[in-house]
Image 1: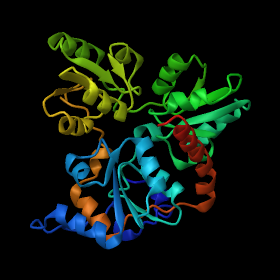
Image 2: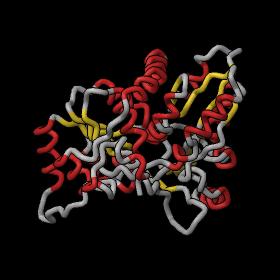
Image 3: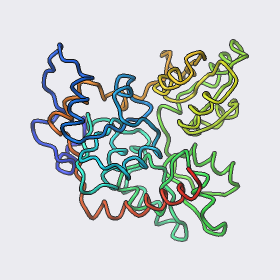
Length: 338
């Protein structure tokens, strides 16, 4: 259940106490056609993350990772942004677009990584390192962004860290695995917040090793949020977009993929002749779905567009504080050609 103390912050009402519009949808409706109609009627744009359900990806105007989504949110001329992702992504869109309406299908779609970095605890952590600047991974709340100097994504993290003078000490939050990977790539020692993504930490080193032995022709590709032992097995490490592009451009025909399974839809669409095998997690499931991402459904997407709720509302003082570190990230990315 979405935290009760956030109902007011996010413009909730008693009718939305479930965190989404909970009304029946006519089963005879062509939801793809209805969503297309609503986009035109309301001058709306649907931004969707790669980890969304395939139906949502197929109806979206733009599909991407966190950097691409932030860039699209910044430049859109739409009146309403419909964000099919998790709540920190919608928050980022609102931070960049204070005068636009931002809605999302289900406010309960949170993020385990963002949850691993409570603002009060992080503020105390930051106070212990007064001579450090803060680089925060975009997978964090607006409150953490407001305490940061620069935001980064897995696509631009190395460029962001390299943009900081070498004698400047850095706190990196909230993902310890990504922070450790960046340290190895840049040689920069950073103070790491002890946070992690439940999706990327659950991959099984033992099962992946066995799967690689079973499919010796397959390249093993992994997201840098994975644990170090898993990354050591990888033939290629990259952001979600980086992984997708690698499979498109590679001459190899088979890939074991260690990230959320939603990306396999775009990989299969882009390279239908190739084989994509989800890396096995350390549980009884055959794939690795993010339970937060998968809270969004095509029905909820249609309803949130129809009723323009749930709407993400943010206090202006918080938005202003969170804006500048995102602006710095976008400027660094543009300069790096990302």
